[in-house]
Figure 1 (tube, one colour):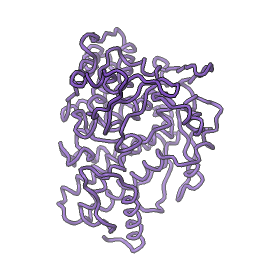
Figure 2: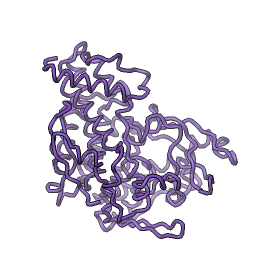
Figure 3: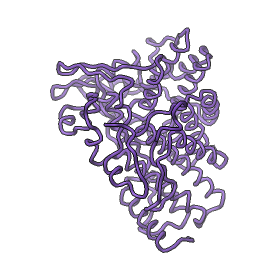
Figure 4: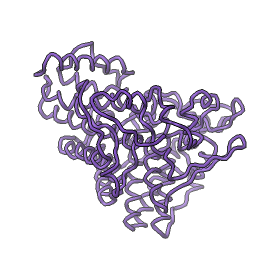
Length: 469
């Protein structure tokens, strides 16, 4: 490589960190040995490192109450308790003084993608076309990591203030001591779109693994970005393009029928293999939740389960009512891999449906929504969707989407943007142990504080908190 000795040492140190932090690799392909990366295969192994595709959003899922959390866990983790019980008075900045995986793991992944972007042009044992594709894949992955950070630590995108409100630190260099700027929300979205637009001409229709983005992935992510910006025509165009590469939907009714005996066995919670892994036909790409290999999904609260549509075969295939230690919840009966944070055809169909509804094409929107529903809802419970207004149609679509993508980053991102519109803003309420709790759509809790480890030791830059507590 054409670098100084100092840069070479930094790259070597980063490579060792990546190796030390990696889990089981896709198809057991691993970076070999502790060496400075030089070949195309060395860099390609970074993308195959599953640990860099984790998307930890634990506090967001807790805030939405999308998962059940045991009292014993809440009692020992004050930050969990503050978000789970919607405590407006809690100083979450002070409480977020430990290991914040959302921050550290996304920026570790970004360092990975930056390293590929900068040094793959000098890699050996590959064609220029192959190297250009790998760089393009790294740009899409970098944008995906920034999307999670932007929709966790900063306010949601609003045209009226996106150019003045701060987002998150943006760094495009793999160097350990690289300087950075905490860009505005508008600037970060421009940078994410720039990465995707630069990548698209260099990507292929297929990729070597589900961890490597392809053209379908890029267009699906572009649709996600534009929807978050409320640019419905652009999001619809990107969604339609993504569906030309993959438009398949998994039939959860058939899965339930094939596994009915196990699922309905009284008093047992026998695990079935999750179909939501690498070979899930809906995948554009694979990204994990809080862990890579997970034996079970998170349990679901009773009140949250009640918001699923009657006859939802996907829910029934994944969860079963259980009481343990005096607490009742829906317990996961699946095992294996879960594509909670990657892009799927379901998300893209529902992006398309919302965009059509927003553009007053209500009939087409509901037809698109029902393409998903008909593969989920048992025949005896299924009826076609109906709505007479844009608001009614969007509400139906968002309800399905929140259920379909539960435990991933999108329900949180959607709720934040929807809360800015009085037509869709939602106030959550609950009663536990005789106490009433409320989460208002305007609550500051929807923006997570940067960890103290970042703000107090920012490195070669400065970080301003985006929330008061």
